[in-house]
Image (tube, rainbow, N blue to C red; front, top):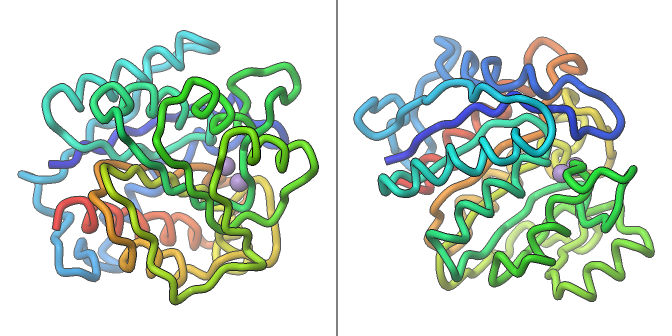
Length: 262
Ligand code: MN
Ligand code: MN
């Protein structure tokens, strides 16, 4: 069973706020009569016995927000639920993984993003959305971190990649036919800016030359691994056109849930 947790937090964004407004809009698209609730593998995400929406977390600012996220996720994992979280900016993934690593000590992460989010220090905010995977790796919370879609590596982040042993498939080297192999439990973190802005304009950081919607879906479909949770982050409704990015987010939500439960 999957619990959907909505995390309206964008205070750790470095460039633009707005992603806090994302979760209800992704859910509106998810339930919209414009489509149906089926993932492409035939799983019905509208099965209320298997997919439960827990609604928006009530959050205060700063570290207490991080603690609340970790606690909410831990509560679901302790009830043997899988969790799919809707952000919010990418800072939410650190407290989510803190909870996950307790239930799944040999956890792997597949991180789909234009950015590696590995800054040691970004604007003196340890929780910056530019740093969650640095925090995860320095605490040794996961077995493997595999990043796909990356097209913004700078010298500092290259050093971080080396230091933490991150497996990076840069966009320039991406082969859409490859299927990723994971032994052990797998968490999938999807930053909407991994997609080319042509497919998903509703993000704070437009980074041209990205993945197509189909390529992200195929990555999910083709991978071998036991997917135990995931998140969809960085949708910024203020930058969207005709809710098209909300619809892409809701499509990925269906495919993610379908992969977890079927
Ligand atoms: Mn990110
Ligand atoms: Mn990004």
